[in-house]
Amino acid sequence: MKIAVDAMGGDRGVSVNVLGAIKALSPEGVGQVARKQPISIVLVGKKEVIKKELAKHGATTFPIEIKDASQAVEMDEDPLEACRNKPDSSIMVGVKMLKEKKIDGFVSAGNTGAYTAAATLTLNKIKKVKRPAIASLFPTVKDFCVITDVGANAECKPKFLYQFATMAEEYVKYVYKRRIPRVGLLSIGHEKSKGNKLVKDTYDLLMESDLNFIGNIEGGDIIKGVADVVVCDGFTGNIVLKFGESVAQAVIDILKDEIGQSVFRKVGAGMMKGSFQGLKDRMLYEEVGGAPLLGLDGTCIICHGDSNANAIKNAINVAVEFEEQGVIKHIEENIS
Image (tube, rainbow, N blue to C red; front, side):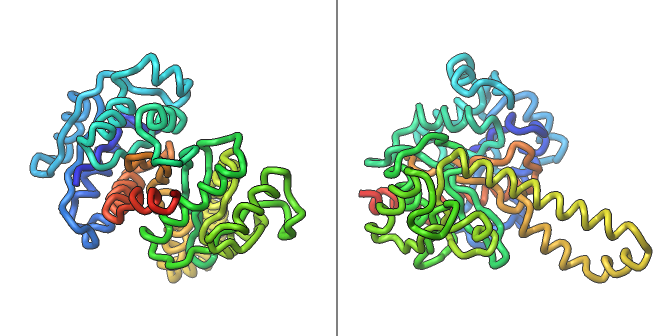
């Protein structure tokens, strides 16, 4: 299996993308044992820059190729303008390789809007899918849930949300082995009468479907883990995701500050080091890796812009699992 990585994407630049690729190919890479077949990685970006970075790590024996791309999309660029004006950017080149079946998946921490636009304009949609959607893992007190959409579609119709739920159900079912995922519709109250017109009309569609629809859920229900799939429009979902990320980091920062207030607290913290690491692993985006863009004929994994090497490694593992489990095929069968 061949997974491409946007070497130029993200806030931290080429170094973390190259190191993340190396980590994913190392024996200790998370998910390595579960892989059904060996993988190789294609680093897409400015060839000479990537070669220098690989040389720093002595990664000459790893199954890594370089695909030259002379341009890079900046994080603050207009997505559509970037796609039009930079045809040789690492994002555009990676998506074209996916279209031509030269790779099995493409991972990028670059400009999310540009990646989404490039993928949507270049790749075919799965038959009958109206709009692709980003499905992101979100931590809960029990484990995690998947929220969709979290940014691809600010304006939605009820049928879009219904399809988001259907696609996310297949993702959760096959990648995370939840046999009958519980689907919740994000609203301002549990009652059927609560919410705007979009939510009310979507509620009726989900009630009539074969999905395991548990009804409306409120914002506070997400963290309680009452649903495996949380459905909403991309505008709302993106706000929820960004707020959740900031709260997770704030909790960890506050804990660090409180622990540093006295020697006794430091001693106690030392004894609970494993628990604190577990808290961090469950709450921070870097352990999630990346979010798939569901609904397209290609494995597209979108990473947080501030991803470190560990996050890139985990995103590569998400791409591998997504492809090995045949999620696209399952979506195609179920959506029809």
